[in-house]
Image 1 (cartoon, rainbow, N blue to C red):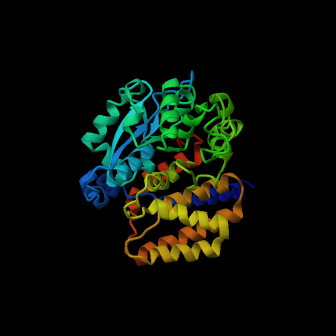
Image 2 (image 1 turned 90 degrees about the horizontal axis):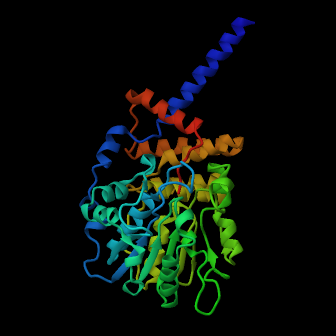
Image 3 (image 1 turned 30 degrees about the vertical axis):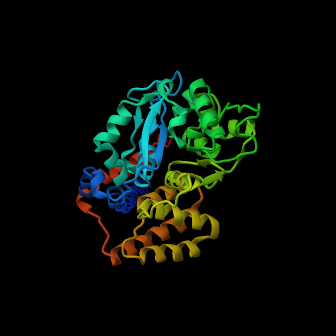
Amino acid sequence: MWKKLLVSLSILILGVFAFGFWFSSFLPDPEQKQLLAQTQAGDIEYIQNGLAQTRGRILAVVTSSSTMGNSDKKTGYELTELARAYYVFRANGFEVDIASPLGGQPAVVIDGDDMGAFDFAFLNDEVAQSKVNNSLSLADVSAQNYAAVYFVGGKGAMFDFPDNVLLKDIVRELYQSDAVIGAVCHGPAALLNVQLDDGSKLLANKEVSAFTNEEELFLIPDARNVFPFLLEEELIAQGANFSGGERYLEKVSVDGKLVTGQNPWSVWQVAESMIKQLGFEARPRQVTAEENSVDILSVYEEDGFSTALSHMRSILHTSESSVDKLLIAMHGLVSVMEWDFPKTLDLLRLLHHAAKGDVSAGRQNIHSSDFFSRIAFTSKYMSSGNYDIA
């Protein structure tokens, strides 16, 4: 009996380590990550060769909240949701000012595992850092100076956006002057409680996307006790036609000059849709590996494995394209947590083909020498429910 037990335990342990090593092969190579962290704005062609002429100014607003209400849970604005939009606006000819309810240096949420070239460039950009670390107070903002306003996500927005009178005045004035209003993830909390001069609510009958109940409650099961409300429910209560997409995949709604996105993976499209609503064609940009993976996962959810595999192969066939295998792996882990094993198997098969595709294109970067640190990294995701998605 004991012998069988030991054999079974040994097989289980070996299986866990084998899975951990396999999963770790999809993690970014530490050396490449270190090089990526040194990215400067001038290193990115899209930014470096942005439009020289100024088309106007866009105001980006971030939360001043550093904790979730009266709890000790830390929060702030989401770096990726500011950095990527910031450079899309700049590359398309718009100056960007950054404001917050209180002004000064707001708290920031930086998830190192989601950071890409644009995000590190923002951290290394002295001008951008000066703007965000010395953010304008809303009390000092004149709405008439801006062609658009963009509300950055971050869970803190749930606490200091909905009832801020100054913020409401800015939204009302810009909306009624036919300016563009953009918001992503928890940023649409800024649209709550805005009453127009005719007495109607801004949100009435507007198509809006934002962080969904499903996304919120999966990450924070007691979210109803943490937040004053759930964003999806409150947007609907104030008359919005809520448009939610697949969990943790891109979803953007455009209703006239109002542009809203569901989550961090929607930032690129929100920013570029805002440029379009401002009357310009957004400059072409190299699609990121993360965006490709989101696209593949969206195709999978809509049309199944075979179509997603075919779509992934067409992406990898392009010499400059790649996919973010870690993102697909994370969706696979989520499906395991939900006991959805058919989906897990499908995503594992996609990962297998993604790895093969990267090898054939010479883009595979797996270093087994980093085995134990990668196993630890994997364990963090498998054992912790504390995912920080704004």
